[in-house]
Amino acid sequence: MGFVDPLTALALSFAFLGMLVYKRVNLGITLTSSALLLSVLAMEPREIPNVLLETSTSTLTISLVSATFGIMLLSQLYKETNLVETMSQSLSEVVNNSKLVVSLLPAIIGLLPVAGGALMSAPLIETEANKLRLDKGMKTYVNIWFRHIIFPVYPMSQVLILTAALTGISLASLIVRQIPVVMSMIVVGYLVAFRKTATPRNDSEKNSVHACLTANLKSLLMTFSPILTMIFVVAILRIDVAIAAFIGIAVLILITRPSQETLSMPLRNKALYGVTLAAYGAMLLRHVTIASGISDILGRLIANANVSEVALLLTVPAILGFLVGSPSGGIAISVPMLAGALSFAAPAAALLYIAAYLGYIGAPTHLCLVLTADYFKCPLGRLYKYLIPSLGASFATAIIVYFLV
Image (tube, rainbow, N blue to C red; front, side):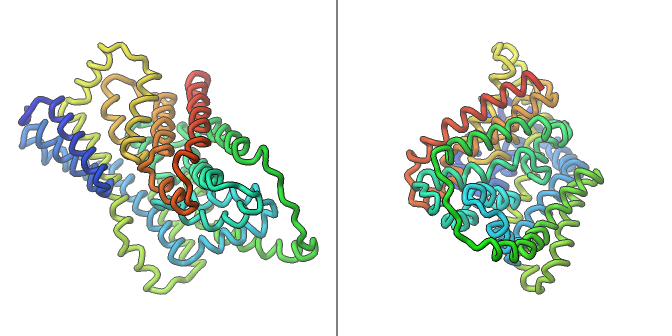
């Protein structure tokens, strides 16, 4: 027994976590310090070093932390080498359709999991969005919505990898169950943004287009090759995500041949270590919650409350993802809370993931949302007019998939 009873310890730790979130403290520091506080309050002092050692030496933790570090490092190198700008320019030239460009560009930039990365795609879609005569609210919606469509089926997504690690469900099982949700998000996004929008006529000379197409296609494939290599290594060769991330980095270095200064720039970026620490903090929080017995206590309370599994899987992660402004944070807290009451089979894990993710997309603390709205000078009320119905339709699809797949 610790200093206080387990439920009081949990309440105090979550209050501390909420305060850090409100103060916009880095998520890695927030999760790790909250987990440490919970261990001090709820566990015997002699048990704490064992939990820390078990978490730090766990194969799962090492793999998750290494994968997170590698993926973030690759993202930063894409930015530092200007490969991301080359990629977006090539896509604009290859895809000669404004509607496709403004939806594909945010999705492609979304392959690089950089905090606030929607700000990278906002300037890139602006010209094409103006051709479509989209207003401020719709420009903001398109950039936010299509940026986040790819993540539920992207095998290099840290959030998906974290969910698989915490629930013990394979990455492939989670991705398969997210495919219908992603398809519905694409349809919803297209209907909301483009169903009343005419495609602008392109007056470019066909010969000019054909002359440049091959060069631009080669450039697009070249810039995509580090990401495509990672996906191939994970999906086809079944190699660990952490190893795949560093293979992707090696491919990028071979393509761009960056200077020593460019290579070292990401290593001086605090965001790289903050996101990596968040992966460790999530695992530590899980271990502490289980070792202290809090997970079992919560499980019994939830079972006695007679709340349906679907309601728990939808509301708990969605609310936490919304409040924390992070899908990783929402999942890291939800899984230990619900582990004592639920069995995390693939349908349950998939629903928990998408609930946390959709809750995060609509959060006013969501950095991509705030930065994009600020860039396009869009009031949040105008954005939510489009965003709330889209989220509602996506939640509905996720529930249908849970029962049918």
